[in-house]
Each structure stands twice: as C-alpha cells, then as structure tokens.
Image (cartoon, rainbow, N blue to C red; front, side, top):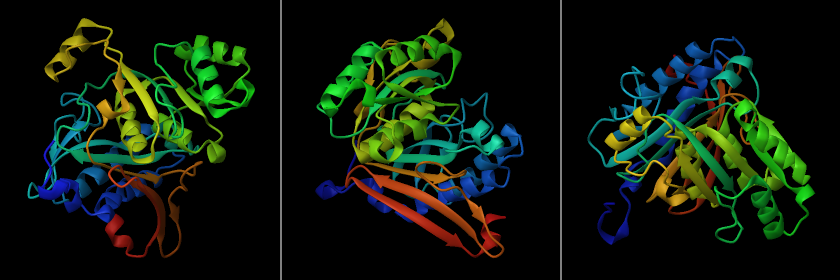
Length: 328
C-alpha cells in the first residue's frame, strides 16, 4: 500500500466534498423515480449519474466492487477504470442505488453509496453472495464469529453488552434462505428486525444501537454490499466477518482469476477494506440514518454521511442545491 512521504495518504488529494458529490448526483437521479415501480430504470439512472461524476474526479480509479462483471454490466463494472487519470491510484467500491426494490416502492433506507480507498486496499471479488456477521464498536475483539451459531453469537453480544439476550435485536434480510436462522434467533428470546433489502444500511445501523435499535447483523447478502459495509465500519469502528459463497465450479474459477485462492476463506473487516478509506452515502428515501432527497420549488435537498478511516471522522452534510441545472 503506497503512501506519500511522512505517512500522508494518497487520499489526501481527494476532497471530501468531491466524493460527496458522487453520491449526491446518484441519489438525486434515483429519487426522481421513487415509488414508480421500475427498479431497472431507477438503478440505471443512478449508475449513469454516478459514472459521470466519477469521471470528473482527479483520480486514477479502478472499480473493484461495482454493478457486476464486465459481460453483465455496461457501466461501472468490476475492473472499469474511472476518473481523469491525473490523480492517485485508488480502488472504488460502489452501489449507485443500494436497495433498488426499496426505491421502486418508496420504502425506507435506500442509499447511493461509495467507498474510495488506496490501491489494493479493497477486496477484489466476483459479484456473488457473501455470508456476513457484524457488530458495532465497543466490544472485545472476537466477540462474534461467523462459524458460531446464531444462538452463540447472540449470547456473546448480550454478555459483552451486559444485558439480557431478550434485550438484543438482530437485523436479518427477509429471505427464505434465512428461515432457520430467524427461527433460531427468535428461539433465544432476542428480537429481529427483518429488512427487505439494503443490507449496507443494516450493517451500519449496528454502530449506533441506541438510535437504530439494531445490535447485530447476520445472514447472506451481496458481496458488493459486504465490502461497502466493511469500508464503512472501518471508518466508524466495529467488527465484521464475511465469507464468499463460491458454491459452484464456475464461481470458484471466476474468483481465482481475481486472486482468490481459498473459496472458504473467512475475511475480517480489515481484509475486506484496509488502508485509508473514505466512505460516503446519500439517502435516496428516508431512513433511520439519512433523510431522503427532497425536491422543492427552487432547490434539491440532500442528506449525506461521509466518513474516513484514518481520522475516524464522521460528518453529516445536509445540502441545499439551488443550481438545479447541475442535476439535469
């Protein structure tokens, strides 16, 4: 991982507001299609807007987590190069519209999300599922383990927090594949917050359980969302483990071309997102963490959170954009 003399990170050359503009543009584009029922179109306009803004940044960027692999995604695919090419070499993980179904139905917690890190700092993996478990900051190292049972992990979090198991709430994607996990967690006496989509937000919510009511995230979701969530946790603090679901020979072969030799490897948070990381998310729809885009007669209002791992800085930016022409 290259840094400039004196330990200064290459990311110092990327202004926070420039990263924020990337997610703002994608969120505004998607927000125009909230509640319209067209997931594909909402995702496409967010992709187009994010790509346009990324290509204006003074970076030499490589998308390592994107909208899919090259044969599947016309834009922002894994391996695509973005930026002006005149700045530092960086890895980029992104989801122009996290929660496409949420946006299409105008439900809570749809986001436009990006993480930018020093080159070779983000997990370079195929677009597959990932098993994940995560908690926020303040717990002893090793509190959770992906190979422990849901019962064991819930009990460990409760013990570390100093509360009864019945005071713990787990966030789980509402999918048939999680039926047994949901049954087991409920059997412990813990509560469950089921979400229909958007597990980046679900994982980030573990960092502030007093506000969100979520203590632990567990289950299987997208690998792109896993890397993005790991990047966010590195900026806030927390623990996370992930394991790619490479359950076919084709997936194993694709992963091998990306340098993944062990299909069963358990990745820690620091292995998924290392080095200096900048993470930004802008709300598309209203949620527990961010307000959605608001359109008024003479302005567009956005709500963004931007974080950096090297300084453990978290900033909220509520912006009023009066130059409506910039958003098309």
